[in-house]
Length: 334
Image (tube, rainbow, N blue to C red; front, side):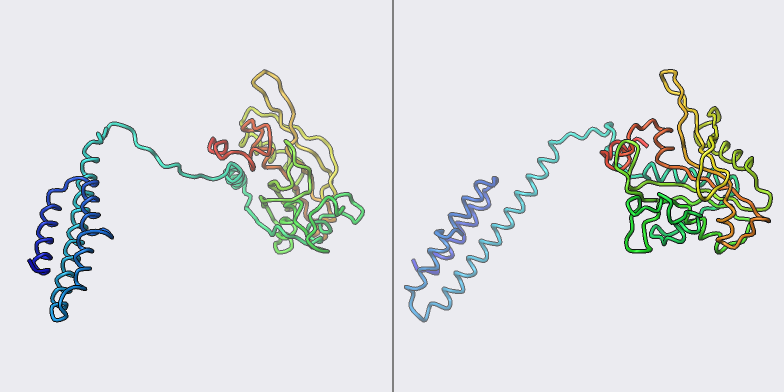
């Protein structure tokens, strides 16, 4: 029998053997036997060296066709077995269409952002507009225009984040009030929410970064009673109509007279406690003069409230760090 006949016989035998294979293990054994490094196709091609020179072209072509045909047949059978296995696996899985689906977790606004939006909505109903300003400020807007003198402790470099001489991270959003008044004539009625920075030691009630909302109303005939009414109505709108407020005399360089506003909270054990929310007062005449307002014609009030403090009181959160360092599962509650 010639080598060409052997090639044809090998092709027929391999094809017939492949047709009867129905498992992956048997298919791999077939591949090793016929197409492996020591398989029958390899052995047949090595016999080409012994063939007469004039027969080598025809024998080489036949041998290459053999290898190509068997390789293609192997890949086809492999795909066929894979598809059949996948179908069998799928058919064995029973689908219960009555089971509830797995809903993807959808993100939402942080509780601080939610609170800022609610504060803006409450104040908008009272006629306030929202104003924003830069978080990197100069000393004029952060201190000088707010009637804070050089010797005041609030200007101590250890109590502020100075970036370079004359520039700092703002320590209150009162800076926005100054910027608005510099470019707007009365009446002015704005709130300024945003982040502020102070180098406080982080604990349950303090952080080096927190959020404030400052309010400002300047017009002719604005009085302290307007301030008290505004803050009392705001607290009732945010905390509930049953809350009580009180104002304690205090001091701030940019307001005169000044006060602290407290809210009375009721706890589950029956106890009550007054909690300070922030400071307020009538705008100091020197502040009005710094923005070229006539203090003989205009008066105004200003207030500043800590947003984290409001969130913690409303949702009974004991530690401010939960808002920024906690497991996200805690924040998913809100």
